Image 1 (cartoon, helix red, strand yellow):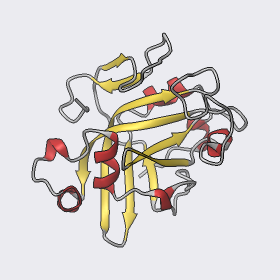
Image 2: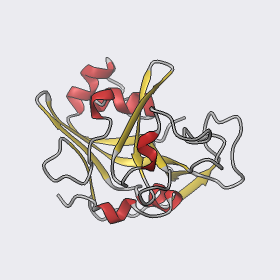
Image 3: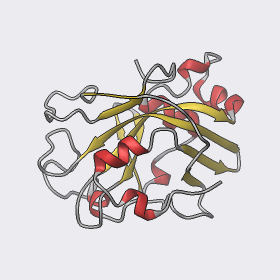
Image 4: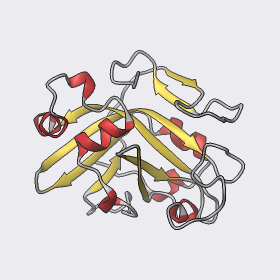
Length: 191
């Protein structure tokens, strides 16, 4: 299991969002191990991006977006935790929202957490993903490049897939650039 290094995250946020597709999010905890292939992401820039948490400058909530690449940025929207990865180099705000996973390990635990037996519903959306994976506010600020950490992203295996892009979902004021990336045809992509 090869963990992505900090240098992977310290690049343009759209490149990081695209390159996270096919990588594996792993959560190791007392309840058990859960993991999934990242199949959908969205990139968020800084103050020039109207949909970004950093659009209005620094706040206690978004301060981490100016931090080192590879840190977990977790916040709540409409009663759901959302899991982001800080991207860009330190001092430049950017984050990638993980929108959907294809479950790999710990599927029974995910079913319990989500109270569903429909595997296509386990992780096919950002709130579903965090609930199934057991991710909450306590993970905010975790270093995803720490090999001993409970939450990491690994390189994964050799997968062949096509990448599609669109405008971000649920965003009222978006940039012209398409910043949502997903694995074309994957049934776990959010609907």
